[in-house]
Length: 218
Image 1 (spheres, one colour):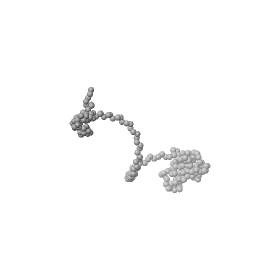
Image 2: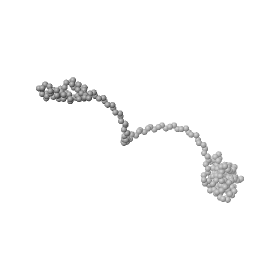
Image 3: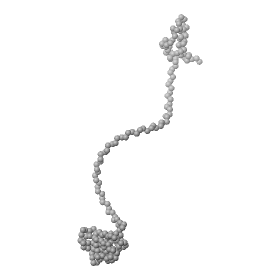
Image 4: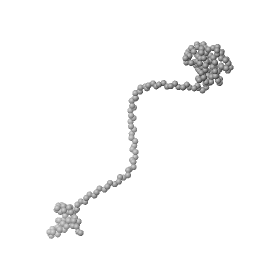
């Protein structure tokens, strides 16, 4: 079906008006009525033409956001920052108070005699050998004629040196101990019989006097 609005346009109207003007008046020249500007057309006509152009279409709906793209690769590491300045040295702390004195430790056990000791023992003033504190001493005898002389025989071995130390209560500048080694089978001038190997004399200001002592033989 023919629709007059679809055929009506600005170009069609302009052509129609030009044809009408050229046919009316008879004596007027067509060149004097050429329309070359919209200012020559009645504003009412222009308004009607614009109204007949149709309503402006509605704005389309916005499209949905596309999916997020993949993460890009990590960028290169930045350059190292400059080295910081060295901090100031802190003040020296105060010396702490001394701690309390500790309790004295327990007395240690007596050490064993070192290697190379041939024999050792403790002899009381009366000539009795204390076996619990002795090793490799066969006998101790005191000659009847004298006091402070002790004749010692070993269980084995040949002595080369002997050292005697007096009991603590008897040790003094006045009281001393003297030792001597006898050759095999020899007798001593102080009354020890043959077979004695070590002689210990305990002296008070040079005179023989009984006293207990410890002896070590090498």
